[in-house]
Amino acid sequence: MTQIRICEEADWPAVWPLLRATFEAGDTYAFSPQSTEADIRAVWMEAPRATYVIREGQGPVLGTYFIKPNQPGLGSHVCNCGYVVAPEAQGRGLASAMCEHSQREALAMGFLAMQFNLVVSTNERAVSLWRRLGFDVVATLPGAFRHQRLGLVDAFVMFKTLAG
Ligand SMILES: CC(C)(COP(=O)(O)OP(=O)(O)OC[C@H]1O[C@@H](n2cnc3c(N)ncnc32)[C@H](O)[C@@H]1OP(=O)(O)O)[C@@H](O)C(=O)NCCC(=O)NCCS
Image (cartoon, rainbow, N blue to C red):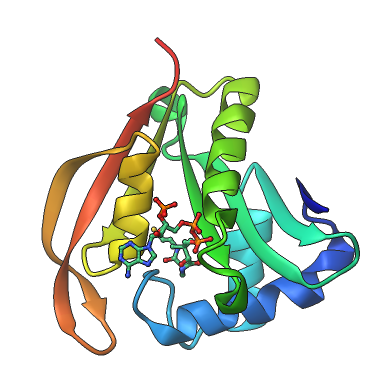
């Protein structure tokens, strides 16, 4: 059965190749396509408040996400998350499940809202998914993402209030 749980040290060897391949593609996240394992570990495991994996028992890691405050101090009630699903597991609702899980976790941690800072406009799957889950595009950042195949493309700031 598919389960979302905290990412343990023992999961990391299966998680970072998935992240490396995602960042190398240079079409969804701003992290450098040349990121080393240490770079990726810093952003995905060390900086966040919590990191999760989705896997079936001890089967392969199917996806992962992190949650962290989007800003320090007076902006720290808004969280930020990043999600990645393994290519072979996409289209099965796993990102939807992780995003819904993250919203529950965010509320339990005391966050009041969730913000995605740089949703690449050409990442249509992600944009439509986040919209379906209740996120609004609150800003368009012109040419803010240097897509590795398409050049400069727009990026969206997407926001959802979780609690009043
Ligand atoms: C974006 C991503 C997280 C989605 O993961 P996923 O597990 O495939 O997502 P789900 O299966 O929960 O939902 C995918 C939705 O996109 C839709 N979809 C699939 N391909 C699509 C496309 N080309 N254009 C628009 N929508 C598309 C599906 O129909 C589904 O919507 P539905 O549930 O209403 O039918 C995954 O593709 C991924 O890891 N991409 C690389 C990293 C990334 O982009 N992360 C997000 C950064 S903002």
